[in-house]
Length: 396
Image (spheres, one colour):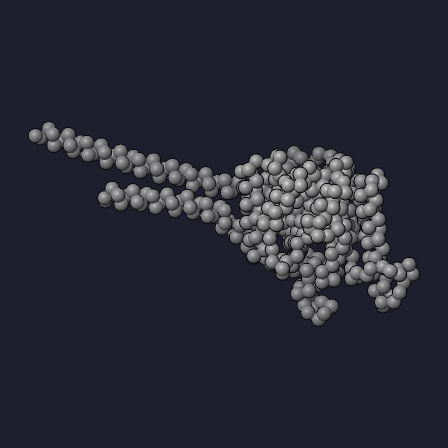
């Protein structure tokens, strides 16, 4: 075979090997992972009953995608390659999930930014621009963002400027109710539930009391057939449904000792005791939220690991793991089908970073073997040519 043909073949193999590994790891790998995910069916849909508007219950259920702790790296502590890598991974995973699953609403449970608590205005604007690029979405999908301690700081770091800066970017109050298809999603600024009477704490607690009254009045009005009820004049009416509560901090629990599953905290960390008002909300704040709203489900983030907890034997809480590969080898998100009186959840795991590293290492090893084989083949040709020339010289 002509030498130039072999060289072209080797070059082609190198391009296919390197290009194939890159295309698979940076684009294709997200598709088989997310294609394994599907929207769970609500219990009513299984029973074949209809929703309030006569359509099958599954058609009236809200398809909500829930993720947490994206931690976009900032200008101070974020290395440029780390930022490039993590943001690319999250962008490809999110865009692939939107394209394949088409959620109606997406919730991100706080800690959007890693350095929002101390970012200068210039760095803040740069972080926001990158966030909007990564988590771009069509008008068919609503994106709802909650505030976390890394966005405005822990209790002793937060101030009105940082809170209002965050709320202005995401065009909404950090404590409110979002209603979709008769489902009430209660968003709580859990960073402000310190209970020490700070100005922001007072404002958030006042708003929570008002929202609790509005929800209770809505339930009473529904039970009274739409008539007026005592003490409810001027209240904002919501659909008569117990809320799904979403916040950054988990409600109080001692540790993650009871948490299991592939996205739970590592075994050596599960028995570490949580600190109130730092790792989890205080006992008092947790009980107050449960008393005010009696939520049928709580979704929280902050710990970067998955967990399922049942508070007071009747209030389930799901901790949603971090969406960033910087915090986990196996990020995941929640798919929720929610109707006014039922919900069903499923978990969707993203590709493990160790798999990506393994593919690149395997491709690198094959590349080295191919180059080595080619070099040895060239060396063999040269030795053969030398022997031939030497033989001819001796015959002369």
